[in-house]
Structure formats: C-alpha cells, structure tokens
Length: 103
Image (cartoon, rainbow, N blue to C red; front, top):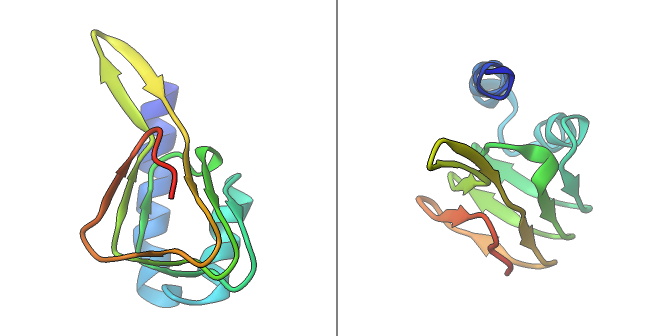
C-alpha cells in the first residue's frame, strides 16, 4: 500500500505543479528530485511519469502530454520496469510508453 499512497501523493503534487511550471526547467528539477535521470535542455510539458526513479531521458528530449507506464499489477504482484529515452527524441501527445520501452 505504500507504493500506491506515494504514487497518489506524487500525482497530486505533479498536477498542481504542472499548472504553474509545465515546460520549464523547474518541472524537470521536480522529477530529478524524485529520482528521474534527466539530461540537459529537456522540455517536459505535462507528462505523467509514474515512477520517476525508473525513467531516463537523454539531452534535448521533448515530452508533450505523454504517459510513462512503469508499473503494473499482474496476478496480484507489483511489476516495475524502466523506460529509457535517448538524446534528441520527441515524445508526442497521447503517447503511452510502457515498461521496457527504449527509444
């Protein structure tokens, strides 16, 4: 239950912060503080990064209203997986990147 509680708390903070600083370096700093590996000049426009510590974004990446699915409950077990995006990639709106995705 700790995982679910922390996920909901981060989601609430993210939603509020997104209204004010989406697309700025502050939003990237927020996710870095939560453990995401984020390169230089990354633009985050209201992404949903479920477990930031499992996400890696290279330099000059753009993410626009996409969802990163790094967790699932399968057969009653919590399964976690990484999402790794290399430098100079662009993730467009409504994209869903699931665990194991590498671009």
